[in-house]
Amino acid sequence: MLGHGDHPPRSAGPRTDGGLPSRRTVGSFWLGVVLPGDVSPCRRRCPVRLLPRVEVMSVPTAASPRPDADSAADSTSPAAAPAPDRPTRTLPERWLRKDIIIAAVLAIASVEMAYLGQWAGMDAVYRSSVHVVAATGAAAALLLGFRRRAPMTVAVLYAAAYIALASSVGVEMYASQVLLFMSFYTVGAWCPDRRRAFWVRLAIVAAMASWLLIASVLGFSSGTAGERGVNAYFAFLLIQWLINAAYFTGAWMFGDRAWQQAMERQELERAHAEIRAQQEQLAEQAVSLERVRIARELHDVVAHHVTAMGVQAGAARMLQAKDPEAAAGHLKGVEDSSRQAVRELQSLVHTLRDDDGAVASVPRLSDLDTLAEKARSTGTQQVVLERIGPAPALPPAAELALYRVAQEGLTNARKHAGPRAAVTLRLRTEEDRVELEVSDDGRGTRGRLLVPGTHLGLRGMRERMDSVGGTVDAGPKPTGGWLVRATVPTAGAAATAPAASAEETR
Image 1 (cartoon, rainbow, N blue to C red):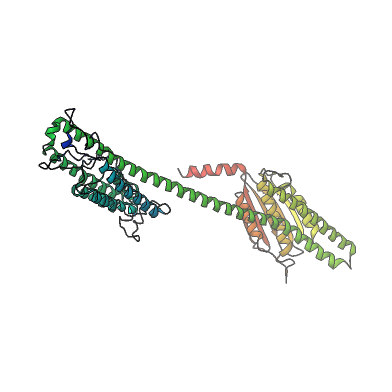
Image 2: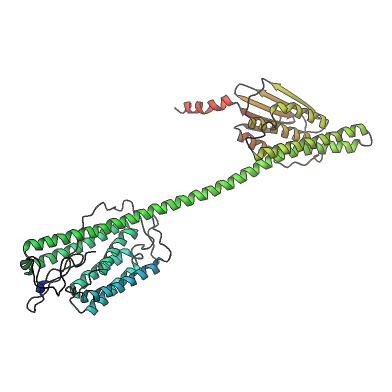
């Protein structure tokens, strides 16, 4: 901060400008002033440190406290912790070692400045020997090794030590200013209790200003002011008050700004960590959904054709001796089913690689005739396809979902309805929806099922209908047999449904 000002060293000659004191009245000051004193035996020097009076400028109150993990309730105990509802400023790595090193360096600098000040003739503020001034200044500097552990305690202790040393043994003028600034600044930058930080800093400023006021009055009545001139003395005091006000105001504002920047940085880091966690979670969910999708597609493709091949192979084995021609027909069906399974698996691979591609190879509702024909040729069940209404206009995903429901329904009928069951596949197109039904009149096979089920078919149908905004119902019929009904809204109905629900809430 402020050096020794405009005063010449003690070896300077007599006064020549009519305004500055003579060699007998030379004083020195730092962050304020040690008022001029007389070095003669009959006149006592009156060293006074000019301390600031701070105008509090935009100091945040405790309305939005932003804490500090480093000095919990300003206690020097490591176990002390800030209130859990207060934000906490994260301490850097090895902060204590860094603070101790800085304090030790400043202590050494304080010792050097004390001796250099004596050699330069700027020791008018020393009330004791230079060795005592250097030792006490170094001891006070070591307090700052714990400035982030207990910022308010360190600031109050150092301010009190500063006033006591300056009034008793004297202090050097340079390193002590850096130490005072750091202790005052740290309260604003690291204290978690913002209300207490405000009042502690205000108390320090009030104490320093009171001390400066007393020193100014004593200096004015000491008699040296007359030697310098009243106007010169008051101008000198005004300079010191303004410099000290700027000094403490800057420390106050810089400390608060450092706290605010630290809180903003920590908030950004927390937000970044949350975003990364959400991205990882979304990636895991995407993998899980894709795995479910692949499993559903494989189930629909493989289960249908493998079931058909199993039924046909069993029939061919039973008829091989009695009716070789019929057995050969069933084996031909096995061959056709395997080729169709390979084609659908290839289509599945292309679809999974590129959702926008291979749309033409995806099964559509127009392929239901082929599906019903293959179901009839596979076994002895009577499969009938009924189309009610015009051809539906649905997106490819919705048509694929309805096709897979029909495929799964026919597969379940083949496995559970019995060899003589009558199966009806009905596609109904209405104004606001498209409905597909797969029903049979069978009551199940007696004894063991031809092919054990995996219990995943109904789940897969529901997942498919959910993905396209449709519904599916499945269950036994009152008259016997089983019914699966899937419904998908048309494009116009899906577009008007949100508008209608919004209109009802008005």
